[in-house]
Structure formats: structure tokens, C-alpha cells
Image 1 (cartoon, helix red, strand yellow):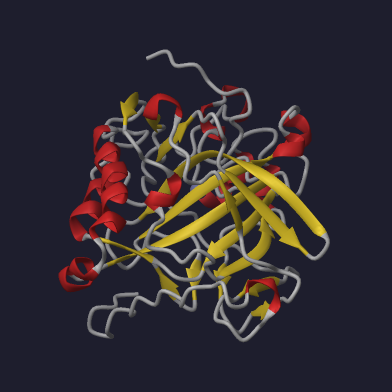
Image 2 (cartoon, helix red, strand yellow; image 1 turned 60 degrees about the horizontal axis):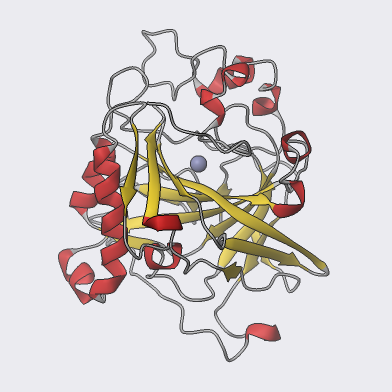
Length: 334
Ligand SMILES: [Zn+2]
């Protein structure tokens, strides 16, 4: 199906369908009997994928013991996240490695990343997901030893770099990716959430179901859907971890300012099962599409905590932190 592409689409989930970047077939090492290039060898996928073995790669394991609260960080600046897409039209694409969703907007959702005196605006480009074959795995980042069954990546492009993809792909802060973890909620936990918190998340996941076959791309009209609705379970100012990293798929460019939210969103078993039913590059199910952990090396992980005792310009405006209880030991498989 021919669909117009945004010339600035240069991100982890799209990199593989730019032929110049991907002369060889890469995968997650699940099918050793095929010619797919496993994660350990992604640096050989193309001429520009050498970064896959560099020192500032993603994902990483994040612990409160290796993350320092940083007073230079402030709350994430979301603007136009409540804007609907043009004509309420969303584009859904199964690229063989994940399902990617984007849209065009009259007013682009924008994430402002501030640290100290530095401030940059990043426009929303696309979102996609990483998941696993069972609830014990799936997320790319691991937080305090927990791997989650699903991780959402909202990819944003630095507005200053938008005119020149070459500049963007050499700017260590060219992309801002927001990582959001999902945890399977019990029926009682899900029933306790306001219905509107689940409605838009469910609308998006029902769309994912339609992208079951690889390389299927389609438009869907979703009246009123906006990113804020998708993330309704989160606080207005969620706690997050910040570090410098990379795309998590070839070419693994080290151009990403990561903001990984500390608290997960709840999802149902049925919703999660939809991701595991998608067909991948090789015609088999995409039942695990997370990259193995990369070494932190010399990088620092910073923490912005909305917990309240840090003061600063967010004090008094931050709602209580959403705290969904972790599974009990008996349920926890990781
Ligand atoms: Zn991703």
C-alpha cells in the first residue's frame, strides 16, 4: 500500500525500512535457524550501524541506587498533547518489528526537555511498542530489577534539527524518547480506574489488532483521541529517569535524550495478548521485540522525583504520585 512518508521519519522503528540503512535483515535472535542478524551482531547490519557496539547504548537497567536525584531537572513539559489528529486520522503500521502509530496535527504535540539553563522543544513523531512472550519480560528498560511486559516509546524530534535529517542523526540530543512501562492489572485494579482512563488506551490497542500482518499500513479515524488520553493514568508531572542513549534498533544512533517514567500504566491481559498475536518480518509472531540490556559505562542516570520534598517550581502543583502496587512475589515471574 502506498502511503506518503514524512521525510523526517528517522527513528528506531522506522530505520529498518529505509533500504540504505538496512541491506541485511536484523532480528532479536529468536530464530537462529534463519539468516537474521541477532542483537549481538547488529553493528554489522549496515555501514552506519557501527554505533550498535558503542558505549552509550540503550536500553539499560535503571536502579534507584544508580540514579541520582538531580535538582537541575524539572517536570516534563507536555504541550498540545491534548490535540486531536488532523481529521482524527491516525496511521498504524506493522513494520515487521513493531507496530508504529503516528498522525499529522494542526498543533503538534511537543515535549519540552529542560535541564538547568538548557531547554529544547521536541515534536511528536511516532509511537511504538516493545513486548515479550509472557508477563515476565517485554520492556526494554528494567527498573529496580523489574522487567515489564510492555514498554511504549513516544519518539520526538528536536524542532531545531527538523530541517536537516543529517544534523538530527548526528546530534546527541536530536531525539527525545519517552519510555512508558505497562503492568498487567488485576481485574479489581482495572475496575477501580476511571473508565475514561482505559477508553483511549483500549482504542489504540484495538487498532494494533488490525495491524496483525507485517507491512500492513492503514488509516483509522478515532474521534477525539489524543496523547493525553492515552496516558491518562499518569500524573500531570510524572517522576522520570533521564539519561543519554541510543535508538534500540539498528542503526543504534546515539542521538536520544531518554526520559523513562518511573511508574507504570495498567493494562489488561486481553490487551497485552493482542501485541503477542502480531506477525513479524519472518511471518512468525512478534512475541519478543526487546533489545538486550546495554552497559551503562560512564553514563549518569538522573532522577526527577515528583514525590514532593524536592521543592522547586513544581511544588504544590503536583498531584500525588500514582502508585500501582507491584505484583506479589507469587505473581511476579521476573
Ligand atoms: Zn522503541
